Amino acid sequence: MFERLEKILTNKLTATDIDKRFYTHEIRELERYRMLGIPDDVNDKSVWNDAHTATLEDFKINEKTQPLYTSEAEDAYIKAELKNSLGSK
Image (cartoon, rainbow, N blue to C red; front, side, top):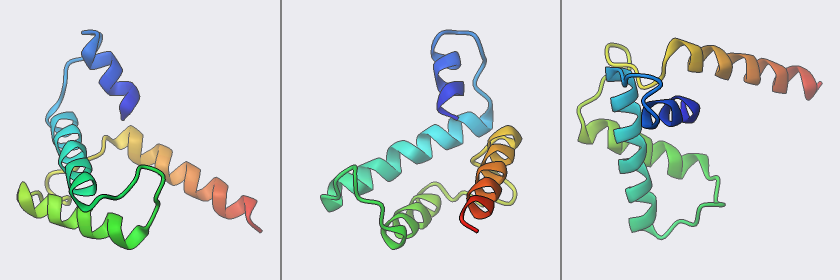
């Protein structure tokens, strides 16, 4: 998704509604982390889940009808998760 942002910023790609939702969501989520004083190197899933859920509520986003991720990003995530799970066996 960040590669898409670079293309959007250089006018090589037009931002879609999904792109706009994703980037707006990520900025708000980062604001929440900053307000909580959480450093960038902390990877606490419960903190992320709380910040993520609260941010979805802020913008009244239903991920089932208003996705945050492109289908390409979702496919890449699934492939990475599969690779990680197979590599850990």
